[in-house]
Length: 136
Image 1: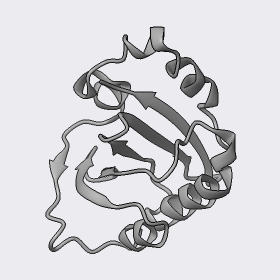
Image 2: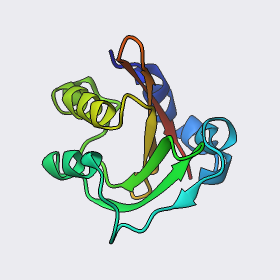
Image 3: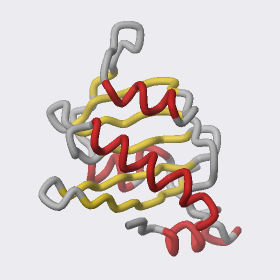
Image 4: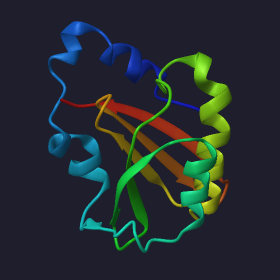
């Protein structure tokens, strides 16, 4: 189930857009992620890398946070995740990423489009929820 559509629609208005926080002051870095460490992509091997390739989401960098259980992928998203018309892409993409990430939550930071896609996963039910955050 995808959530966060309302957040994206509100954040798309010019008035709210001007109030977007810097990346370091987003909910992602204030509340969800801590103790982040960069990963060397030249040597990094993980099944989620193949999912990113399959869905043509170019990865620029990766950090592992929360005792290496919460990855933050710095990548360029192919579509605006806040539009319902992209469900055909995002629903299977998010599910495949969650599954191959061991049903752990994760985030994707798209610096080009100033969007954070936060994927929260319930390990028991394997339900995937999405939240979208914009930044400056």
